[in-house]
Length: 264
Image (cartoon, rainbow, N blue to C red; front, side):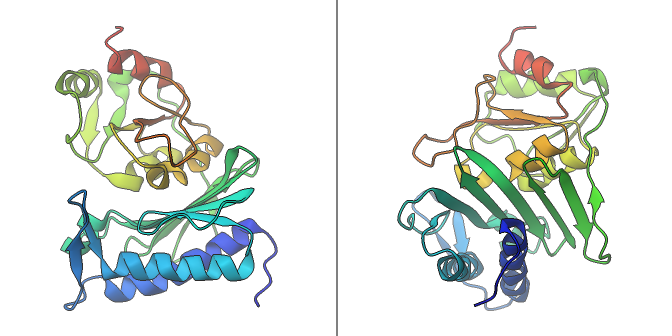
């Protein structure tokens, strides 16, 4: 069995394995895509990535739990790995390179580690509590530390989202009108760009735990803030519904919450 120095090194190993599987299936002519009960697509790559990561986690840490998008939770333990095998499956199946594998570790009542690997974009982001947030381009072996932007005014802020599905029209229009620039970078990318300081705020009206768990330490370790639209903390258990997700550079967080709740 491979021995790993720490959980972060193991997370990178998982991401390497996921990238190898998903890249081979990206733009494959024989890609198999089916529809889940919630009418969202799932590809054979989603299933293959999550299957392999579950095997690797069980081999390395047999007492750890696993929560993933495609299969039921494996046991329950003090430590839980949270996996989205391909975040952005709709992009993946259409040949759009904005998709990634999301890996998080929940331990001691908090998300302690998050990693996002987007091989078609050639970029990987990661963070662990107390050790900062980092990004590496696949063309370089040297990661760089990330820091959120210093924008303090919504009128100067860049706002990113996935699409308008699920939004309250008034909420969306308020935040759109209040900001300088709006782009639908989508899914994980909105929030990793916040950690890089390239975008100032991102919001999604409804996400599952596996959609946002890895993003929490990446944004916060870069100096940003995350919460629900209400300002309440995000749940970190998979049985607490589908909360809204707001991430910002921190300076804009209170103003965003006020706009989203019509308090301005």
